[in-house]
Image (cartoon, rainbow, N blue to C red):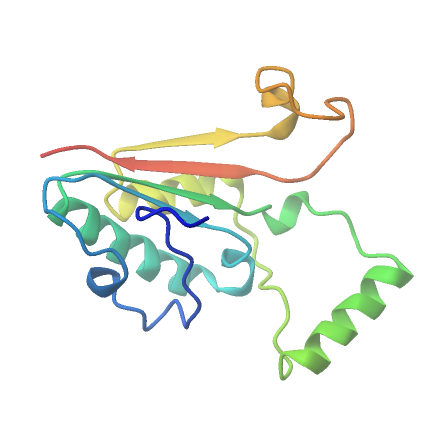
Length: 153
């Protein structure tokens, strides 16, 4: 983790300056991973974040955004343990819970394209587990990974 091109950042995603977070030469492409965040943001806040990323990527000529998000319509209903965990999470986050809306994968892809991304790809562990020699390739997971790219203009 002690690489000069690797930076972990903590802060409020709605107010962090991407210019400050990702300094560098304007011609260098940027690769951003946003993990475990978007499930807390409503659709409008997500789209604002996407638009800010696109603006920053265009300043840098190009860039890639990778994030994980399982659309609410694909999530299983929580059982007793899930309900207790959500209650605990609300206690620790001041009432904040996961954002729930009716958007599908295609709706999220459309949000990304409308925000200015040139290409969006959806990756599922079940489709990539064997290709990348991941452990336990036959274990089901709900995880969905979105890869959104801006190309050089």
